[in-house]
Picture 1 (cartoon, rainbow over the protein chains, first blue to last red):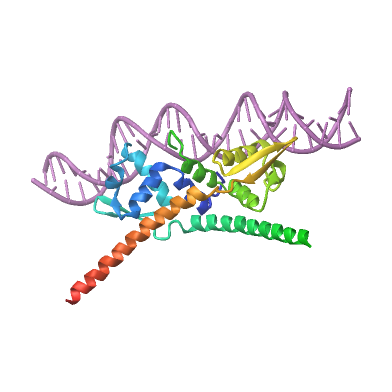
Picture 2: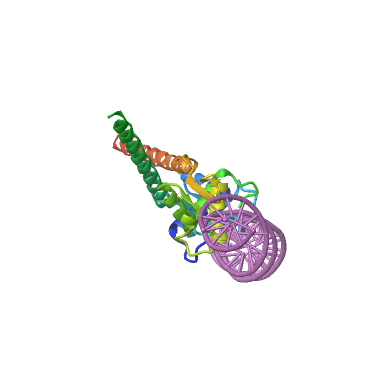
Length: 113
Length: 113
DNA sequence: ATCAAACTTAGCCATGTAGCTAACTATACA
DNA sequence: TGTATAGTTAGCTACATGGCTAAGTTTGAT
């Protein structure tokens, strides 16, 4: 990883783990406490908390403590940067395919004349 | 990382590095040899090759060797799984917001009666 | 036949990641 | 006031990652 992790680095790295993706999928259905989130995962709490913290560090999840329980929820615009990047890549890629397509089309026309 | 890396794990992990994202962005503009790809990156060739291999392992890049030069290109449907996953998450999230919206709307109506 | 180019392999090192247990803190409840 | 609940902190291990150099291999050009 780079010395200065960009937001994209953090996002993609956070998403590169099934436990963390499962947490996000669960949170997409609504907020939950740490132990509610942890329940389905066969893992010691501290290990699980480390995953949660990565998601928070990446800004994908927000948590607040009420009494002794910590409630977590999805950060509203969580996936925007990641989706933007992927969208941009696809745009370049498709733009290239279009230009290629244009080129081939032009070639065919020229061949006819 | 999990014991059995799913395709998504590999994809997201591959994308979680600026060097590798730069390679993909370059390849979106067309195929290139290893040394063409490596040129902009201030890094020893073997280190760079390691990045390239990760992209290939993830199935994001395809390479073929012609003579002594290896040509790389973007795998056509490269980002589909990643975009699908993100899309699904957003669908759940938005579905939830819609249901919340419905709920609030219903609540308002009931309050009026 | 030689030499340079373009990788490729091997091996080393520093740091990061994912998991664990044990012990601690802070709140709620009886 | 004591005890259980819900996290949290500390400290450990094993393995993955990202970087390097040095040396090897294959192929193209002379």
